[in-house]
Each structure stands twice: as structure tokens, then as C-alpha cells.
Length: 172
Length: 184
Image (cartoon, rainbow over the protein chains, first blue to last red):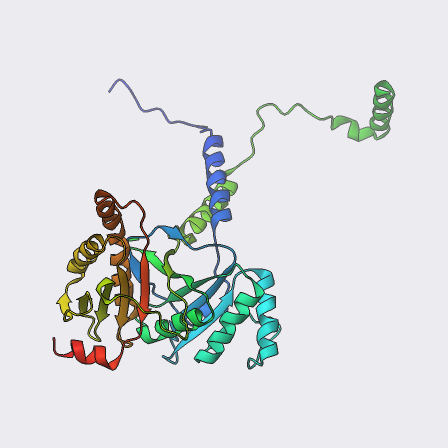
């Protein structure tokens, strides 16, 4: 009982290192954060199949994304075709408008495609716009193989023989 | 020049009268309350930490031959066909003349590895899948083939083949295939 607890009046802790680290982390997370901007993202949720063998990341440039998803409202499957590069978006838009794709608006990025002919046209337009374009097929794991096969056949027909299947890491 | 500036400054201060009292004090022991700043910072930090997803999607690279009008003839003995039935069951057909047989996913791996080593790199893997099969089960098979790759390379190297050329193709699921695997 000799050591009586003192009341620590006016106790000041140096918070500077704490604040430093906090700001550092904050800036890190702020810069690495990616926000979903596409509007149809809410409508079509893609549950990717899980794989364990590959560790390749999706290329960031020269990419044409072909999403195959089931619409949560109408329950029908469709292709959602979009380009990643800014100039490709414009190029493909011009090309598709030229070919008579229905309802192409001035800011359109994603094209909802439901038949093979348009899919082939889109693949062709993408390859015409950017020679180095790579195709990534991002499909929901419950979509029936028919859609994938059709997409593969369309790409093979337009000589896009190398493409990617977007997957998620097992257990991640 | 510096001296002149000082003189001017001093004069200005004197003219202001009362302002003369407000000389810049040396702020010894100056403390700013940082609590609100730290609060907000932590709030933002937690927000960004929780919204960031560190898992980025991966890819599976596919190389398929282009679709041509003319069918390219291949040796049946070099062909290994994997058939996925509409219920997701796997069948494998080795060397073409054999009957398709039911395999499990884990067995498929050994079959593919053995066949590739036996044919010394000339094995053509062809995938036929019923159009109604879910994409997920097709990817499972593709994933298994990718996993088998390291074992194949190792096996080929042991047999003196140092170069690995992978030939993979997708073939349409015909009615003949459907009949073949229907009763098994």
C-alpha cells in the first residue's frame, strides 16, 4: 500500500507517431481503393468460378471484357461486352454504330448482346480497333456452357484464339 | 536592404499604436488539439480498409486453334477426349478407339498425365461438354488440366523430352457423343 496511485493530472501522450502511421495507411488505402462505377454492375452479379492452378492477373490494358451474367431481375443470360482502353471504347462505339447496332448512345461503354451475329461483330470491331486486344471471358459459374461455347466459337471464327477466363482464387 | 526593411516594418508597427502589443510571441510549448483530426483520420482509414478488396480476379489463359472451314485431320491415337455429361459426370476417351469411361476429377489428372507422357508430348486434349453443363464444372476440369501441367512437364523431362507443347482444343458436343455417354 505504499505505492499510492497518483492521479495523473495533465497527462499528455505524444500522438505524433500514431498520427503519422495512420495518415500513411490512410493514403495507401485511398490510393489503392477501386470503386465500381459501371451501372450494370448492380444488375448483374457475377460469381466467378474458383480455381487453384493459376496466378496470372487480368491484364490492365488492351482488354476486351466479355461478361456473361444472369440478370437478377429478368433471369435471362446475356453477353455484356465492353472495352477497357479509352480510345478503344470510342473506336468500338463508332464501329458498332456503323454496323447498325441498335440504340448506340454517345456515352455507351457496355453493349448488351444476345445473339451470335452481334457477338461476332463486336469481337471483330474490337480486333479492328486494337490489334493487340485480349479477350477476357468473365462468366458466372452457374451459366450454362452453351454461352461460353458460343462465345469461344465466335472468337475462334474471328481469329481471337488466345483469351482468358476470369476466375477467383480458391479459398480467397 | 534587410536593414531598410526592418526599419520600415518597425515604423509601421509603431504607427498602429495598440497593435504594437501584439508582437509575435515565441510560442513555447504550443499545443494544438489534434483529437478531432485523429478521429476523422481513423474514421476514413477504417472506411477505406473495409471497402478495399485485396482479392483481385485471376485469369486462366486459353489457347485454342482458330475455327476453320476445313477440318484438320489428327491421328486418333494422339487424341484424348474429355466429355462432360449434362449431369456433370466426366468421361474420358483415350486413343479414340476405346470406349468412353467414367472417371472422377482426381482420376482425370492421372489419366491426362500418363497419356501425355506415353505419347511423348504429342497428345491432343479435346474437351467436349454438354451445352447444359454449368460453366463452373467446365472450369473445374480446365483447372485440373492446368494443375496436371507441372506433373506432365516433370514426367516428360524424365523421359528426355525437354520441351512441352500443349495442344488443347474444344470440340462441339454431338448427338453421337451424347448417345455414347448416355448409358454409362
